Each structure stands twice: as structure tokens, then as C-alpha cells.
Image (cartoon, rainbow, N blue to C red; front, side, top):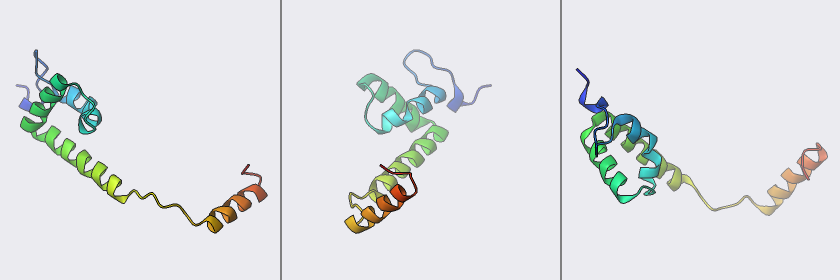
Length: 91
């Protein structure tokens, strides 16, 4: 017998493979309404897919929270570029 979380797609259902293939588009809100709703239903009912989606959602949130728009100080940037040029690696 096939486990519930690995059942094949039948009509409007989404299987685990399809859910994982569309996971990042789903998390980014880039799916059309119909596919988004079917994938949401699958993730809600499939424990392995829910856990994977939850992990990826938390990971993306942590990356976003850690991202800053700050740049390094101009003097440091110039020193790095100067060193790269001296080594023949920069423009």
C-alpha cells in the first residue's frame, strides 16, 4: 500500500513530488490561484511536505532578517580594490 503522503496525483490533487517542485514558488506567492490552493491543501494534510515547507519558510525568513543594506566603509572598499588591482585581479 502506498503511504498517504506519496499518493499519485489524481485530478485536482497535488502529490509530494509536485509539491516539492513548486515549493519555492509557493512560498514566494508566485503560483496561480488554483495550483496554490491545491498545493496549500496538500501541504496542510501531508506531514513530510508540511515539515519541509515549514523549514524552508523559516529558513527564507531567517535569511531575509539577516540581510542588511549596509555597505562596507568606503576606505575599506578602496583598500580591497587596491589590493586586488595590485595582484592583477581587479579592474
